[in-house]
Length: 189
Image 1 (cartoon, rainbow, N blue to C red):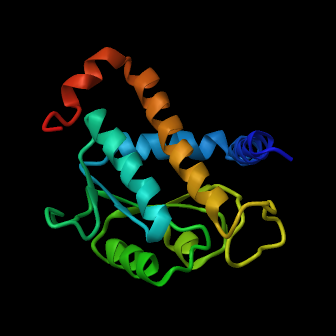
Image 2 (image 1 turned 90 degrees about the horizontal axis):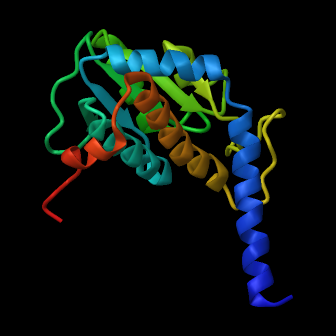
């Protein structure tokens, strides 16, 4: 097989798997998530590894839409309280640091949304809402989609695309002029 054909095969595999998984996300969960995002004073995000990178992209885009967002652990992270929301990304719902941060957020009276694959994990049980992205996890749950990609790549990719989907729905809901978003884009580049 030529490199060109190998490239196309790999690219279509990834796109097809992402489409399959994102089709399985419950729209009602997404609608509830958007309501929580829009009704919170501030939105904090936490995750580890590649999940954190996907969440950083989501936080950045939501900030463009006028939502005050913060990544847990950043130097400018403010204090959280009962008016705030924590979004926890963890496919398994068992990653040590996100579990501990979700527990702390609940102690502070904040709301917690878990975006993950495991509907019965520790974080899901702490959360006020779970948005399930049923991709492969390190737990190999019986109803997970079996990806041909390495490790949890599919979850991380879907999380990134899911963030942009949520942003598009907020833009539609609020009637935001997309061209005006450049006014909120970083300009020290």
